[in-house]
Length: 335
Image 1: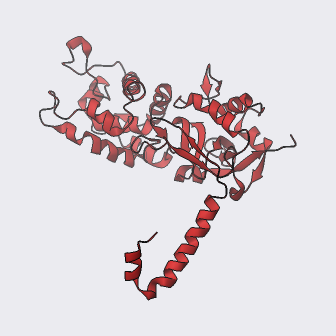
Image 2 (image 1 turned 135 degrees about the vertical axis):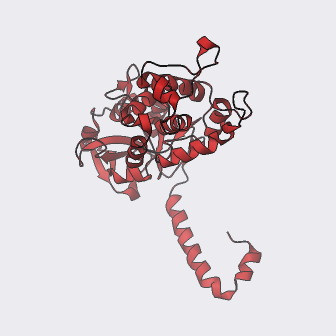
Image 3 (image 1 turned 90 degrees about the vertical axis):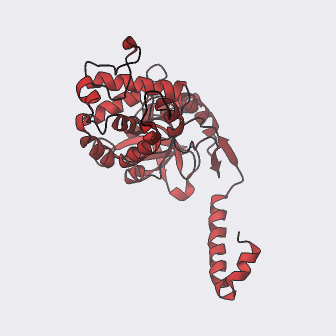
């Protein structure tokens, strides 16, 4: 709301504009607050907010020296250790001058990992680049997941501390801004480690009666890596496997695949969507119209699902997800 003093200075000529804006805001507010039901969802730590920008991701990796063609390796290691693939790649690019340093070209060391056998005096040598990437992924898992260094700033202060004895030229002072810059070039983080959004994700409006039970179960696996074909905690979860398992805990039996779950549900317009409804996507793999991904709606911006960046909260309003959007769905009460 405008302060009174400022409003007076605007003059009578601005009053029609102000009234129009107030009218628009009032309508928007009424729409968003159609119900007083408001729930806080604790995502904890570092919350995923969006999918991979495939175009920028592939373009960046293809220009990165020895990393050319290693997109799938970055993704597989990221899934294995539950880390953000973009953050993983951005750090590797920073440590190796975009895949061109001697450490990575000759010693297959993409993460600047030191060799304990030499008292940390030399860079460790790996038999292959894939082996080096796996070791780096495990190190990042230990720092991000185990130690809780879930922002670029926290990670940089440990991974590349300013004033370190082995950094007489103070190059580490550039680590944080450079990693941010590279991550942006690769399409942006798929896990929101910069802003730590998620500690108070809110549901505004109505929710399906099963929503609390389903989300409570799904949240048990927050931060887990995506597991292709997975449908239980023993092997992990893919997107539809997570939905099937979580809904079953709430007494609702779903078919197995995203395509089958799409057919099992009724299409609903965006204006009628409630927390707990399904959101479907097409063409993330397979044919352009193949229903290939599913999540559960949290609010007008967020969903909870299992995708390549892991299990957790993701922003379905991002460019990637919007380009593959297939529709919202609700369980058919007649089935």
